[in-house]
Image 1 (spheres, rainbow, N blue to C red):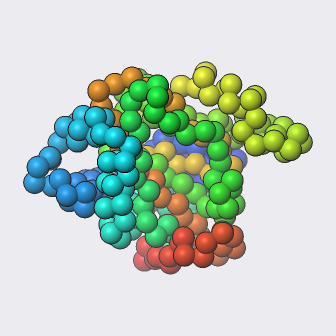
Image 2 (cartoon, rainbow, N blue to C red):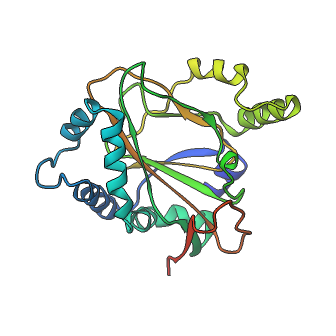
Length: 233
């Protein structure tokens, strides 16, 4: 399988198996530990049910606790080292802190508007890996426009001087996120439009994401502290 061609010249994103599940399982266990629930909750669905009942302020407090989880991004890179190496080589820049995403059920909960990584000043040479901490049900988690669709929308909005116009927001209502199992990761390039939809469940969604790029490519970003050097050697 040529991951590089699929991510750069093909659909722009792809669901792939995580190579080293031992490391990814450790990452999830450390996630429990860093939010202070290691000895109280050891099953992900129990945690998902607990978080689903939380207020947004309580979820934000969990996210603050995760700021001290400094090794998380490294563990994610190590777990998916084969993917990272094919896309960017062994010497890379990686995101200093892994993003942990909590999505609460209910129509009143915020949705993530369609966006692509370049909107936030991320380097055009960066790749993103997004993985759930549990199986995603039929409603899925994050939806993606393929590369052809994404570029068509980006060019249309650029020509009109718009960002997230009614045209693109209306498209959110018809998106179906791909099904992903625990142990799988979605990899995509920074031009791919994506977002998440609201869902009805008694369980919250929990996922993580990390960004990386080759050190041989220009590091174009707003904040020079966003990335750190890492070697897979």
